Length: 88
Image (tube, rainbow, N blue to C red; front, side):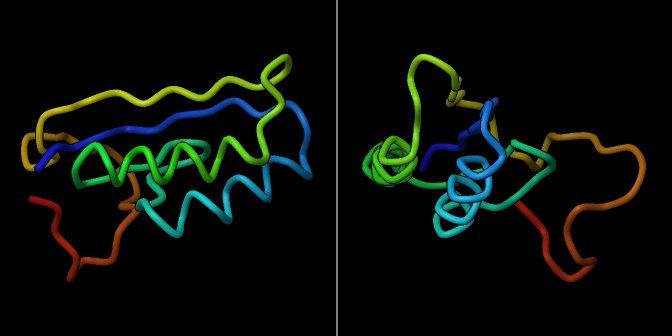
């Protein structure tokens, strides 16, 4: 199972809201315009396909990065997940 960070910069606020609503169906919201997805390439592609339906390729930027497990991630400041949820 792979781990991905999906990040985007969306120029239009209406598109941004629609893309966010689609992204959270598949991935965990980490912070503004950054999402964490755990799964295989098919799951990643399903998310990217759904985002692509709203995307304006001349104005918007979407990137997906393969990362190690978040078990090795460090966090400073306010937690973005409830205390009872752990990512491994």
